[in-house]
Amino acid sequence: MLADATGARLHLSALEGYTFDDFELLQDGDQISLDRGSLTIEAIHTPGHTVGSTCFLIERYALISGDTLFLEGFGRPDLHRREETRARDLYRSCSKVFSTLGPEVTVLPGHFGLAGDMLEENPLSRTLAQINSDVRLTSTSESEFVKTLLAHELPPPSNYESIISINRGESRFDATLIDLLEEGQNRCILPMVPSR
Image 1 (cartoon, helix red, strand yellow):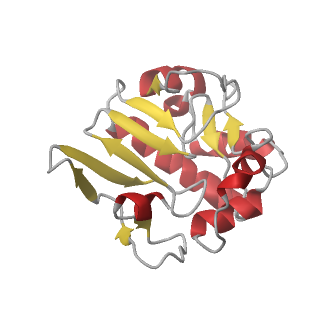
Image 2 (spheres, helix red, strand yellow; image 1 turned 90 degrees about the vertical axis):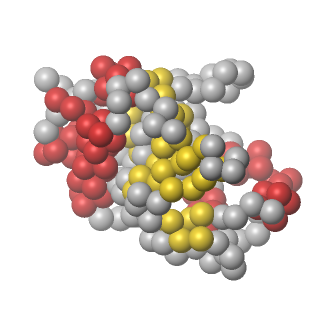
Image 3 (spheres, rainbow, N blue to C red; image 1 turned 120 degrees about the horizontal axis):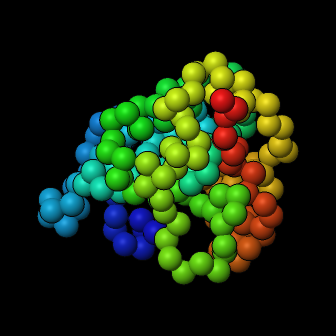
């Protein structure tokens, strides 16, 4: 709806099965230029939460992390089955983010995490260094990460199937139902503070 209203082009992962009529396939490393080339956004494929999860690096300054990386944990790898494979993918994806981007990069997640204040007016953000000081991914082995992540058992998010269907373009979005779609706890995040 936003693309239709503004004339913008949709850029979507080739791995997610979208059913929209008109969009550009997005691959790892692709760059999107805005404002006549003065602003560059790089796509970073970060599988784990979903197979096509993608983060967007804006001018190597800010990372729009979607549901891959939150301010206090990681996106769930269990919502699309193959939990252990997805958890390993998530570890490798986040390891790549922490090792290739500067510690000062600002992370902007897709939505509130565990302790988000929904009345907060400022963007939810922390630097990679601040996040890593809590989640300690860079000092955690893959096997420890997977074991800790899969030890959490949570029910799926409210209205999960409806949201997925809308996101893929299979169902039409009804703006009058936005409150119902967004109600309830955020169950996409798993907190991660590994034992040492």
